[in-house]
Image 1: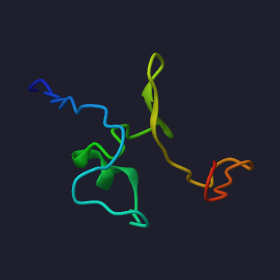
Image 2: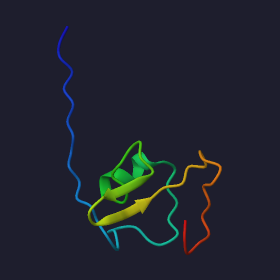
Image 3: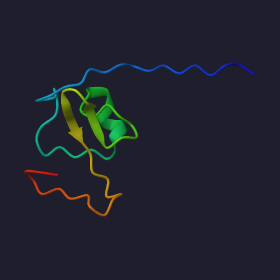
Image 4: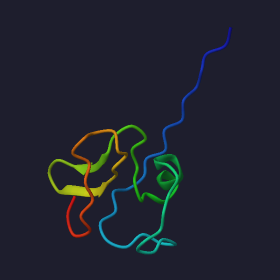
Length: 73
């Protein structure tokens, strides 16, 4: 049986506007957001770097305190 090969594409962390996206865009899941670096993480709700901050936060409704109040999460 052959070895499985996994290719991990490093995507840069982006703060600010993301090309080809607009405020209010709706994404069916995180996988769709990953190629653009809009949200780079498949299984984490927060995408960022502990030293410079969070660039994206996704709410899935999986936690009772998931609340999007427009100006803050």
